[in-house]
Length: 114
Length: 115
Image (cartoon, rainbow over all chains, first blue to last red; front, top):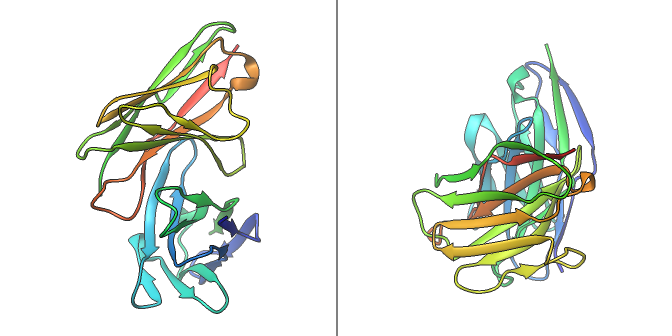
């Protein structure tokens, strides 16, 4: 079975400061890892993914994430937060051997204050 | 990226009626689509996997007769909430994965309110 944990329900950051949204995962094999963002009453938008290769992946809107196999983590980061980054962020994992099924974390609400 | 279109974006219906939600992959063919339900301030709960040309696979606890899924073509899956009740009010989201991609793409979601 695969699972994802996002330990923080909410992260508060001041605009211009760096932000980190945490994610840890559990899969039996090698994972595909994803971050999605959701704005109110909207579907999920793809931000970035880790498939293989470089542990630091860069995605949309200046976001990046670092895959850490030993810590089974895939934290989302951004060097300088914007108020418009305020949204709900979901980490997701797919076991390469488990077909198409995505498992989501509980979500973290990011609040960026001016 | 690939585009998944979901319609309607919101719907209000009376108790006892049925509501159909459509999910279309606009620029790719999807043999598999997924239907999720999201409660306020909560994560997505997978309801069922929709398979083109065959029966959907439902997750444990999801009523097959209440949430009817049809995947009649490679670009369209529908979710019909039958005999809706207020407790069915929720945000429903579909997704599909372009076979050429590793990530899934999501529809805009449908907010269903049953009164």
